[in-house]
Length: 352
Image (cartoon, rainbow, N blue to C red):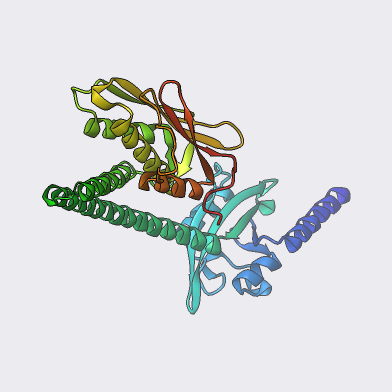
């Protein structure tokens, strides 16, 4: 009998020591729902004196802030050896102190006899966690709102840019029809073609933010160029071949302008007198860089001479190629010509 009593006293002492050293706030209740022991972490966290807690029930614990109906339900259920009801989240409201958000779990420890019945209440303060969660939700909602507003502004800007380019192109075409100088008319037509090339690139980038897939982008761009420049009576085809690749929107603009310039040039000059033929736009990824080429099977490039000046189109392509860290090369395609931009520098083009 004495040995059993000593084991019981030893177990009680061990339980008390564990509660005293717990960093998590704990309350130990007896079979009548009265506090047997409150951990120092509980007393410190909720500003309750240990002596004032022992022997108290939930209703008169502290200043009455623990008198919460659901906590009574959890405690009574554990005292009756009911099923585990899991965690319960509630607000602890005490006058003069900011509300605390708590997660409470109540567990039946043992049931040797009514006088030995013990119930443990574990309290987790999640006030800061919930505050951060709510802040994150608010920030995400604000981000979504800003993204929607940005999308609307981008769409409006794109429409205005498209309208402005169309107006400029129309004015240039009207001026070309009224001037008497053939050279001036040719320059105005060239300016019109370049404005339209910018408009074509801008149109196919309207829905693109961030990364752009090269293949679909160049395919749509060339379909647009073909529909505007290849009449039904001209036996010409324009096709695109591309490795799977993505580029930034800024790089896509440069690639689009280059392709537009080279394709327009090929369609205008490589197939005179209704000649039939094909223009191929090809984007390849030979490591470590990439190659963009426009190849036609037309009459080929005329032989170079000292009197031949570098055209505006060539200057534009060279300047855009420099931005992309690519070198412009021209070669005989036998038949036709191949104009290529070769990039061997894998660094992003906006490093400078």
